[in-house]
Image (cartoon, rainbow, N blue to C red; front, side):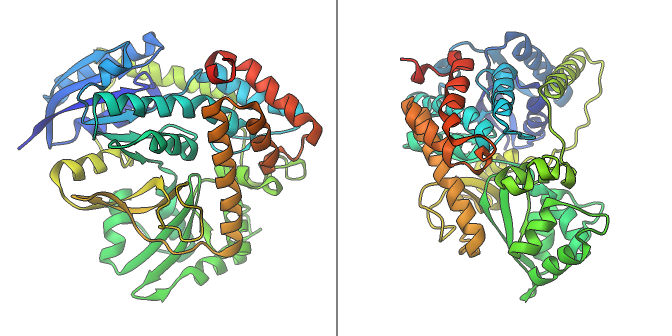
Length: 449
């Protein structure tokens, strides 16, 4: 029987995320309605999203009460699920993250995970993430927190530090390019009538394929791929080696031919983990087809998505009621129905990756069902890959400590350790830290007590 749920969305004015995520929620046949409470400081955007959801109610025959709530604790009261998609400072802070390091010779095309840009974003975002879970423990203990906020590793780690009964899962869609990479390297084609998620988590298994994904967010690796027991990873590496330079110059292929495993994130994220993939000699990754996502382009994207939200609310734009490739509602469905599913998650390392530090957030496959979300054992990462992942995991930990404590010295240490700080003179790193702190001061209260 369909049931009612209480859903709170922190960052509910995120127009670029909310259309797809909420469309998936409204496609849950197991849910007939309940409450959806939206929290966001940008009133113009969150009100537009609320109007869109009221239109979704009419279009899908659902009975959700929709409200925009100023007080976060009030929004979290008795929530069954909480979705987090927030960014303190939004585009103004992001512009500082991206452009200030450039003055020191540090160029990043994306800035969502690592490097000085990712570190700057993390020290703003992680303390808020921690406080959200503290509020959840008071207002909705035992609830599920589904996080899509970046920087994923540091934010999800902060959430888990505060969690006692709250169940935290970080979700990212980068691994959903796996079907395309399998088609390229092994000729395994996804049938036209099979969705990406069904292909990855059901179709491949039915056809006798087994695989392992392991790594950090935005740098997960296909470490095992077998068909009826036969190891196909050597064939993947051979393809990458043979096709390198034949009209195909990708960071992904370069990494696979060197380290033997295929990374699954897009090149725009991967190049930020290696300074030798994003530097002056290779045109800051333009050699690999990566272009900088400018702040202006992001602002324009927000405006386009907001305009679409408003048109949907007014009935001026049709809604395609097809599920997205996001994994969020698949987890919700498995929890609500107590059925078993498989997904890719970011969760604390409890041994699922044997040679990475305990408790750091790692990305692996997981089984979702009556026992909650249980990451699958993924063995050990190959030595060189593990070395790089450990370095970035250590930087994530330093960044988290700096953000939670408001500690400038730890921030300088994190910036100094990150490989992408290499273009700056070492003696300038302290000034870079000070510039980032000053520019984003209003969103960094712990550093300015």
